[in-house]
Image 1: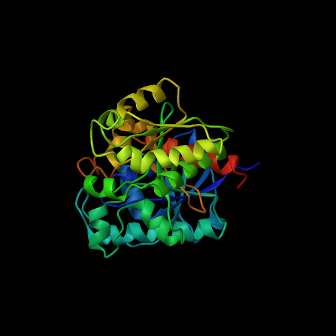
Image 2: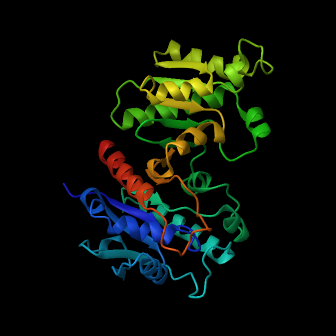
Length: 332
């Protein structure tokens, strides 16, 4: 069988996206598991290649069907939205608008079946907002573009996999938003994603909100009993292998040694912190609940090093690998 076609968005052109895209596509292992077509800006990719000391053949193609896959060639659907003098490492409304356009086209290609998955380089939220697109990030943007009411963010590493009940909102707002229905739906999406990757009956650990998961009411105001326990009990009654609420610090330790296949985090930093300690090059961001497969690097635009040729492509290579594996496991 041929390897899957994947739409690879270039991300914010002022950040490290162009560099990690080029780095990943020139890595010899990438062509072994997928056929990526970049959606972005051909001139920007050529400049990024120069920073890396590489000279690939960056070829503008009209569509996925026109792409030719051979060593040293980078196929790009060139939207031509970035000026030559766009600075590196600075917030730009032009770059934010272009990043939005890349994702929008990738969504259209995936929804029409022209590609089997989407893989995204990082965008910058401030630039996206400056361009008039008011989304917290890729997760919410792709949900809107695909007409999906609710999705979840999952971070995947070799040791730990984490799905989030809430993501890009303040901590006070996150605690207010958490309720049994949302917790239950998040666990169901996580369990379905794990089964979709080939694990028949995943063991799932659910974090509490307060330190020590409330310590039987000693910490907090009974949030665990009110917001988490009803969901866990309902899913356990259905036969799902779900445990919690667990103290978050203990839950991630246990998952790291293999006791749990998936951890359910209640808010952004509860889940992101442990994953990033493992190393950004190890993490992949997966949007769960979309009608299409989407993976991403688990790092931002890194404006401080953009245009310097030092950004590592490891997370992008892994994101492409997991996009290919998920599409194959789900028979796409």
